[in-house]
Length: 326
Length: 269
Image (cartoon, rainbow over all chains, first blue to last red; front, side, top):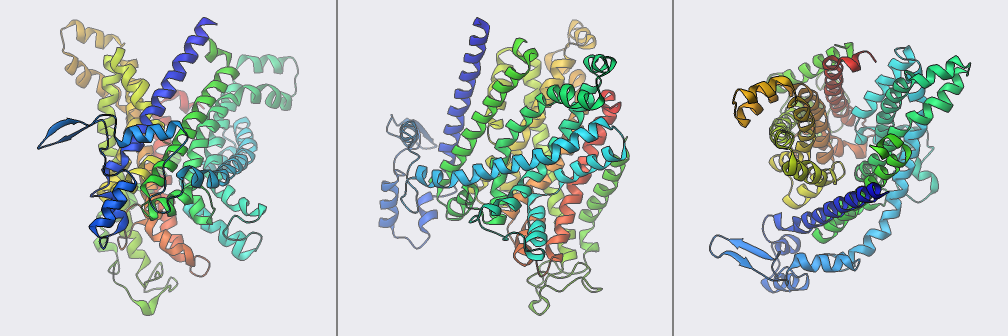
């Protein structure tokens, strides 16, 4: 019990340390913008007064960090009145600042669009599991057969085919030629099908490989031999014994891939004009150089990823006693 | 080695040759526009047809190989050197250095999902080939560092390292002449898979408008430009799409084949 508590505290500290660093890095990203962000946003035609007003309004006139360094003045201590401390102060109150373009709170803009992305990521994950589970089991239980080779080839093809090639192809086939779905948009419930398949294709390929190798490994274990010796049918061996143990590492991959899906959704959302966080980041954030919005989006996606990873780790330990006890 | 690996080597070799000899293979000037010939289907004159500005798609795909491989190779070389050094230092010195590097620094870089950090960096730095390469290196090095650290942790316990130490060899000598050469195999596998990842990432960022800006014939940019007219002129998207898929597939085949070849445990599966 004491060891478990210690381990949990260690994991939690590491997670908080990583979140702190990620927030710090994202906060300071604006410092790498070449030139003055105010000029970049307002354009070359802006007057000095407009630029000054913008800088004051968004705090860009104040120091970036606790200390600064310049060739002429060396290290200068700026005190707590700096943008980094401000951002943290806001963040602890759930405030991600205001958009440079629309003045709307970034938090509201993100929370308006985030549910669509999460919905898409979950749908993609379900598609991936739906394809990978039967294919991986079939392929693993019939090692080196024609089915196995075909599934392995499909898996490598899925990993290699970029989303932005699969997406337009699916649109062409199912929207333009067959007319089953609308090519873009997120108005109707069925609009999620094509984006989910596009986003889930690569994951299904990774999962198929993972399940295959997991099934092969478990089939070689002693308990499988025992079960067979007891006269348990091959079907029962596979579905009751092998899958139960073999799916543990797959859970890890699923957890880790949730973050990848959230980030990968940016491309899928662009293809299908899916009104999620990725499109917000791309069009309103990067496209309009709204750096505050970009910071907010990157931060929210990263923190979701970190939390998903930590939860996966927790579930993995719960599922596999060997890891829990090691 | 598996049959797939040989196929991978053949396809990758073909693309590398196309990239090297692009000016001799290309049939037209890649930037020459001819608005009277917009979206022409494949023909004897234009093997892969023409795009929305009447440019020859075949020539652009051939020159696109040059951009993709240039970015891919640079990213792999830079991030593998950097990652190898950091990973070796973490694994070799252990203790606090290892705890700090592998327990903290690696986790920070792994905390950004997939392309997101590269997208964020390019969003703030601005688009361009150099910046794109820098962004991909920032996300790429940690994979090599983890592999290298794991290998060094394993190899440093071997008897010959102990023997070298007993003979009075310095840390640097042990690291560079004894440990590194014996830990290099998995790095080669990681590099070929990393090459596939870098080519895909370059195309993805260019597709998002954050990579190589037009009129450079990056495969990702070509696909983005062709996307709107896919239903009427699919060839404009199809050929760069096939080129990306084949290149990535080839390097994945090579990586997988090498992994199996170098790891006898995998070979038996």
